[in-house]
Image (cartoon, rainbow, N blue to C red; front, side, top):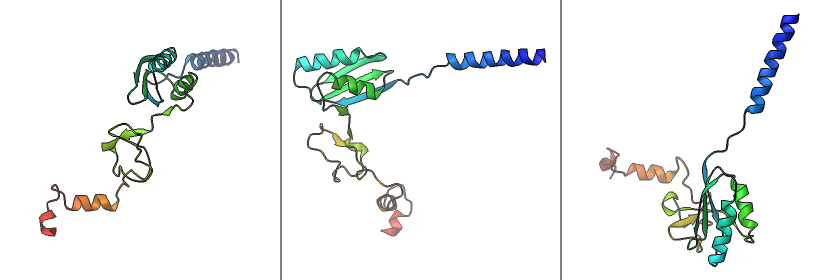
Length: 152
């Protein structure tokens, strides 16, 4: 029994140490935040606050688009809270996608007058349904379809 006790203690110590040492690594990501930026002071205040976050590698503030871009090993919720702590309570995660990425850019809920040029708001109605009738009709008369001429 002495050998088995020794072996079980040895293995339990080995597994306990290896579990304790393992840390969850954060993923390198880019976080975009929409926030109203009025002046140079607001821009500087936001940039200083966000750059003080642990793991933030680069911070870009685009005043024309009212957008803050943070790259690094950061959590989007922490970045949003940090921006809101500067006094910008209406800050939100970037709600827009490029105009070319949406199938129906003028669908209800996706078109936004306040969106920057070339962007529309993310919404479920604007996304194309996979295998929908529109896709079938478009592929029916496409150049890649060898039977398209016989249908016409």
